[in-house]
Length: 466
Image: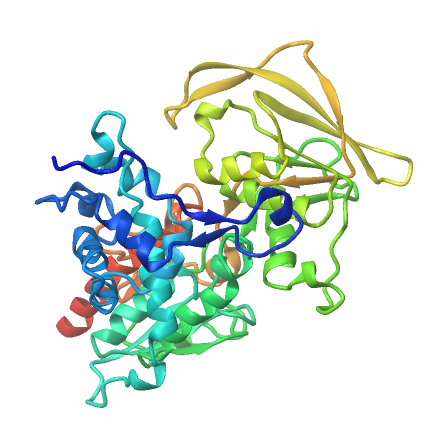
């Protein structure tokens, strides 16, 4: 192996003392020269394991080689063959558990993997800044068929873009007033700027995809109407029903689901109140329950809204934390505190039903459960109280029931999600496909995109055979 730098090329970030008071993006990204410096580290492997580990099978050595050669247009062309949302994936995908985890350079002793995600972001941002969407004209030849996509999150956007490239007439129906799904309502501005989401959606619309907002399929538009008007449809409505622990005191003022809290901030811009008319509680002492990326997003958002103390309560240890390690490190830099091996058992309120504290119990890790992680078990007599005026529960979400409750013909699995073949996206009803969180439960953006790519191929086959 020719001599390579052992560590990733440093990347600029906002100072933690400054960024903890604003919603501007934390990571500032590589310059082209920095990207070229990092691209030199790539070994250009044959049978590159990073490709196989990527849910959308991006030619990673190919676009990195183009960066090394200074050909950003070529790098963007390579990326564009595999992904419709590269600027988003470059920011929020868990590369450390996917492509970078198997990077052969990173497997060498004392070497860090190539910064694949940061390089993807570099190329995607360059492309968004330099692409002329008016020059992208949808094919004028006769369309091969009509496809409805229900939900405009990462899975829906991916299947729509891929089908449009195959010359299908695609319409996305979105229940909210802004497209993007979790990209718009769930992930905070400091991690995924909404201008980036909007530009990525513009690039998909430029392919000829129509996006209709404020359409609630199952209410304002029935599935029977869609099935009559379209040759096939793809359901990607996400897992939007918040879960609660259901402990005593859940109804107290000051107890929120992460869904409500983050939607108010992200989709409805409450952090810019009164410029936007959505209020948000400005808390002093906040407790966030959970250990995933959503918990990190909620905790870091609360800090930016002026909370003096923000504590994440997680029933396992740092070793089992499901959140991206980068997000955890950023949160610690911003002053977020952690109570490990801890679980809430009761919310305590005053005489006016306002939250005053969280009664918790310490946990110990026992034998592994079905997830493969050691099961947390309560330690008798270890209760203690954390003062809090706000609690945000970030413990996962259930399936979005609005469409499902009005479409009983569709077979669901035992968890209440759509039963769909993971290899094809096919459901129990011919011509109806599904993917993303409404099939898998809450997962990552890139896995939802992978499901969309698979379904696009199968929908094309279905319509051609039909």
